[in-house]
Length: 262
Image (cartoon, rainbow, N blue to C red; front, top):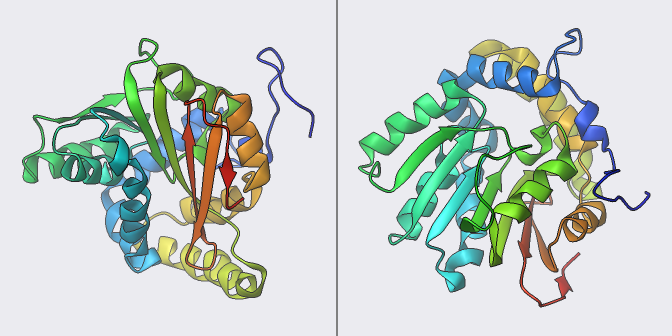
């Protein structure tokens, strides 16, 4: 892979995976429409598909931020706000902004925040992750759970997270990933067979056919670490969960230049 510059960013296969291959609409519009369409069933189907493991992954991921006690957190691609609302509970002194392009998903998230009594610290805003309408160095932590592979331009989106972080801020990404080799046959049967069937029965099948394709095309492991470093992050920790089906990337803008568990 060629090293990118700010003028010539590297392109990634995941950018070419579209929710609706028959549509000529740009990826951002397709992703927005897809999540608007499935917003009402998203949470229940997500719990069903992961057997609740996604909540455990989120808790483990947020534990990496505990030593830094962030006060201002941006949750990009917040969807229905699960990660953002969990951050609100774990960091009671923090204010959290959830951003997404899907108003349908955030509508569900706002209702959840209201039920949980967190509306004083949790706000939702519609935003494009490729061009955040946020001043430089506004947040000391940015989180993205299961949304970064939907970015229309991955490197541009990650560069934006670096821009809005303070000099000693942290980026925390959770993303689905290709599992360890021995587990892959069972995983692909599940993601390419069972998950689309569940989508057909309870939601929208095309959205859950897009899921395994976007996971397969995402730059896991070393390519993702290289991307993060190009975008201004000087240290990266990588951890994989549950046979490798979920991966955590924890990156810092501090001067520490170490990589672990890659």
